[in-house]
Length: 521
Image 1 (cartoon, rainbow, N blue to C red):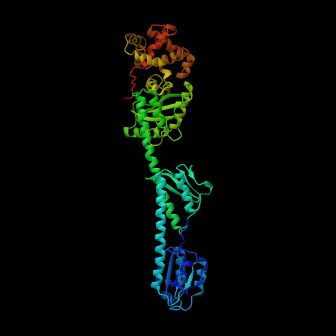
Image 2 (cartoon, one colour):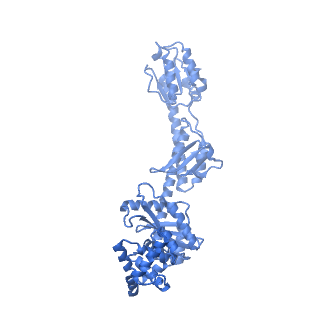
């Protein structure tokens, strides 16, 4: 849309400027005029404005005509439009250097007849400027109303097309990462000339890009662009509000799902679909916890830990990660995963990929912090997800005691320990640990040996002493010596299959002592 500018050429067509003659600077007659000033003071510096018309009798240069050259220099520096002089009042002839500079700078220098009144000329020019500004403001108000209506009706694409039409160029709304969200038909990122940030608060949510470079005199276009950015900020605010509302609803749904308070499969699936959650054939839960590599119970202060979990949550729920959705509950990040695969190995691969995504934890956090992941079994029904959640919690809690060096633990790896936990306190189990484990623990404590660790590695490896030696970084003969010593303490043969079975059960019971599994309330 074009609004006819008030130029030097149109100025000279006004009746009050009848008889005015351009002496130099013809190339600048298309310059637009926004201000007018009558100048008779010799002090030139500091009061000139862009797009300003100066009219003068020449009184200030009557004794020193070269000051007119200085005035032209100043006008060129600030971008003034033109200068009119009553040449036959105080100066009879314009210096040739002033005419040269007028042509050089493209600043029209015109002669004003003596009989023309400065007051009449000033009033006429101000009327033209005000009328044009009033018209432009009316047009901008209408444009802004159209912008607002389009935004409130969620028609962003039409808004972009309208912007392109008003500015006579291609236009596009870009996402925060620079990806084109909506654009006019021939828009190309390679020909962007201007890009305005769309901010909500202090955060840049996106950009409005156009393929035209606006000049200072393109006032209407500048105002349209400013209004477009403002209403697009409203659009992004609406989106942000809706996104936050959806995230809160998703969080509430996940808490309810993990707690097992709803058992109606059809209703769960309907709600999950409404909230945009992925519904693939298989579902399982991963629990991610921040742990300390050196001191298990030593963690950052609550505020810092909450900030860390929030960062992890943002990474889990990042845009595009449609096959997972997480929520933080009781100092654990609980992630609902949806997959087309039901194999345990595929679950482990997904868990390893997620752990890599979440690391490193970032600056400001102790270097000895790490992530531990527990994986629950696969389920096909959403109503059975709470069972997978409980299994993931068990996997991570039991794994911290039985598999302390393992960062990712699947529930299937601790099935026996889970069974033994259900029978915790049984007299037979107490008897086994009392007879087969506690004597070795007491011996280690008294003599500073590592017989318990050696026995645990021996049982885990299925009696393979070579693997035990490799795991403990000792010679195989040392392993054999330690096993012999264990047999002497327990007065039994550790290579006997029945004895090894009992030792294995007793070791698992002993390792799971103190395991605390917190169900979701």
